[in-house]
Image 1: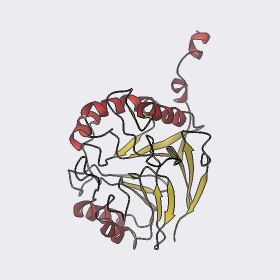
Image 2: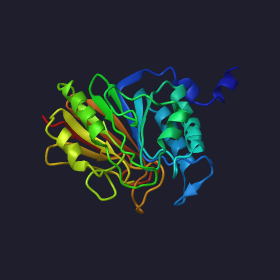
Image 3: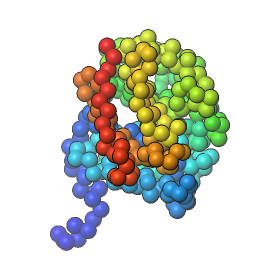
Image 4: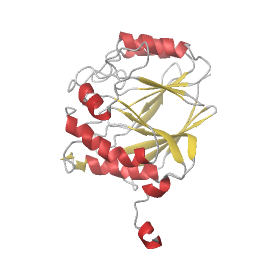
Length: 281
């Protein structure tokens, strides 16, 4: 029996790990297709997500949760894409690590909700948006849905979702707030309503960071109001040679967050690079 046990998948043993309430895994742009063997730009997307999943399961203490900031599906958000996504994420779910997912321009909302059975939105938020509010001990996480139309590259948050965000932020002004959305701000192919979003988050000093994907490029910046702008790398493929693909391990602290870039290529010069972000006051 001992010999048979050693042959079991490591995730079956990981369920006994303690949970680190301040540990979070940030993923974006998985681009999973129904065809498990499909490749794009020389990358097999399902293999990349499987590797990231195994890395998450290998973290010493179980993370408090995993966020995926959109473009979960390969191209046009087919139902089979989400079926494969569920299959690839099952080891994480089996280890009792909650998954929190929002949508991008390659997703299809109805197919996503039908397969993942995620149809609820917070009270006061437009029902056609896949938004969420997750309250944890060190921060409130706000997931916004910027999908306008599948296969239309730019996106928008929309007035109704912005109004919900403003009300929700005002209801908890003492706790740091982190906002996640798929589209990047301030480019023609990103958010159409960047200015309206910043009009909500910039003056509310408890909003500390805006976290997004879409560009398939890793960067950490800060806007003039002190809000950190965190552009997550893709789990799938990069657009520009030399950019890293992978995920980010985030650990919340009293006055900020520690971000560690985990590259799928461990030989990449940016692998393991840490950014210590201090919250604005």
